[in-house]
Length: 240
Image (cartoon, rainbow, N blue to C red; front, side, top):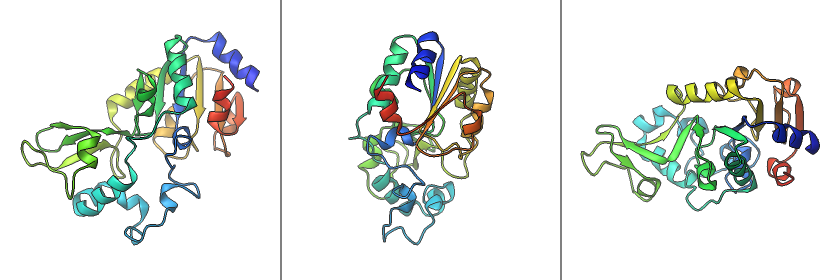
């Protein structure tokens, strides 16, 4: 298993990694849907709301106080460190093996580890913009604000640059991810259940015959993998 994965990596200089929440859980960031995930964490302040509502466009604009309170409590990743998976991927890019990372995560840990070419399908908590004038605000400003965060320049609402429920993905990011995946010799998919669309559908653009799938649990794509590795992704990457 490890030998085959090493062989794929050694023989290729055009690898793309497609990752999900499981990549960051080993840094201490909960995923969404597992038994210990964000959607199953009970908090009396938010229990009356559906989890998807709390991270929706509807909540942001119709119930912004609740949205931002939930966001500040659950989306603060500033003190989280990259783990072995992030570091190995950054090293692979540095060595000229990895051409791009396509991630569903919004925590910025790939960049913190040193990766340069990262397509963030669902945006990033580190970017926040005024909805009126477009002024940029960092994560610290957003997460240390109180109430509804307003722009210091024009008073407009500051929105995290993350894709909420009821919003579409950024087209330029999709285009970049599709191009990278379609050109890859090896596609390594890791730490994702491959159930969240349209992101999961991007792997259909892979044209090669070295599709590696690494995940702790079964996914709908297992039968398509040329190499299937079941286990914690950090454990697998630590062997590389």
